[in-house]
Image (cartoon, rainbow, N blue to C red; front, side, top):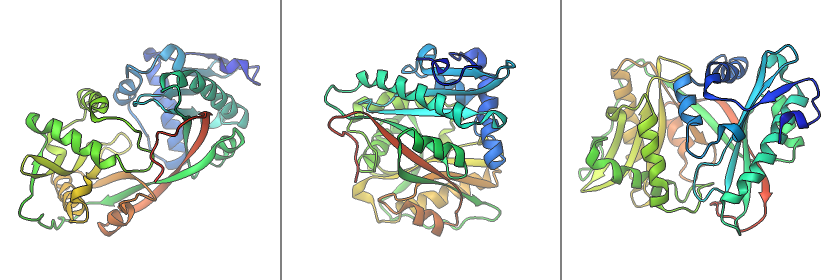
Length: 335
């Protein structure tokens, strides 16, 4: 299925390749510069995304050129997490070429490719496609609705300015804070997996199925610093964690709080707050003046309230839209 098979007659389209990385990054960043005044990604991170073993760039990407031959937009689909019941569709369009027709064409291409990828999932499982659209991107939201998606969730980007030392409360006596180390990795990955098992959208997969995803992430994340991965440890178990990546592509003065997680048995004990504030202070001491994170606006753990009380503010919102690609048993947590 090609974008040129749709209603657009005067465009050309082809699969993207890693040789196109500068163009793809520029298209991604022109989108977010237009919306937020900030870049979203650099070449190394996008290369890591597109090099994932589940992505076939010849079939899972498309680069669109304007009639004059200029890059107008691109899209890719991803279906990387077992049991492969969610297909993500990502579209990026140069603002001057951002029309309903081109957005429709890229979405239609993504939907068709998503239906092909549905065969990876268990035969009796429901498969859905997901699209994120900024709350500020009215045109994209309208076209996603028109394509048959429904809005299912809101997510916030939150930020804090770290211009003063952060007061860090102590954890209870049985807990110690440890940074990432080889002998802690498996326990840390397990804690992260278990902590998100009961969250909305979590797929029914085993830890052993997800373990390669964690391992690959650390192996390919060029900004990975074990000294910014903080864990609350009790005995030999990791009770909770805060993982940070720095610097951010969109702001070299900021660190990104990639993951905040506490296992169910250790929740409501101040662990998330203590680790988060500890992370803020460590980030500040390394010379970063801001920290940011993304959060499910209706997280079952009340994460948004936690971050607000820690001094963070909402700076933007993205909405998640969903479309059923194939009916069947829903393997996602909807609680």
